[in-house]
Image (cartoon, rainbow, N blue to C red; front, side, top):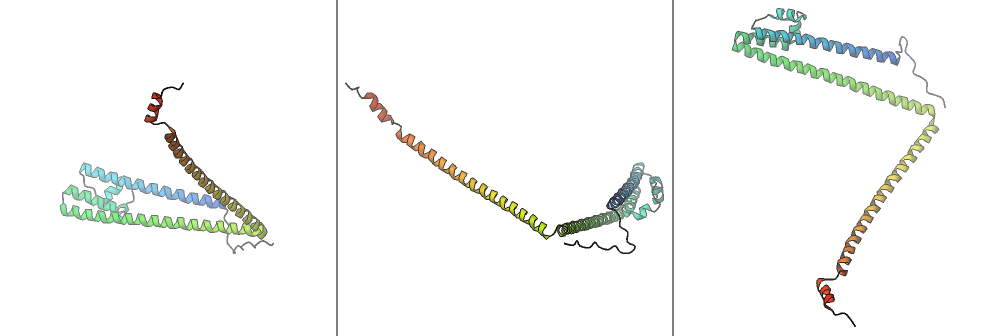
Length: 222
């Protein structure tokens, strides 16, 4: 039987070895981890500056906060939750109630935006993972189909026959096990009934108190 023709490579299309693909994927994953770690470090430095500002009761501008935190001058503009937190601290130091309330509202809105963005990123990551799994399943199915075609219908039928025989043996063993369990249960029931009946016979054959006293008072024979 002739083998199926391999898919033709389109002009200009390069085939990337599987090992190279794994290296590229690992590199991208490592880059994502580095960016995430850098982002967390920048955020923590800003929070440390805000904590120091609250503790020292020294009002700092956004520019001074970013300078001390060693982040991009536009960092607070890009992270509205931290900008709102800075405004909340300044309002607290100024003892301005309305300003503090407005800043607290802005901080909550910014926090919701951050949470929503994180959920969207997680959803996108899950979608990518789902697509990767689906692609992997399609690849495995294609390989399995190709292997069956290469082996031929006779070999496939032989394997199917062997699998069917194994299934029949398994079903037979399960049925035999169920029958044996049923038989054992029946034997246990019979044994229990015999024990009860034996106890009754022993109790019936044992002499009662009156019989024992009569036998004791009867004079011995000549």
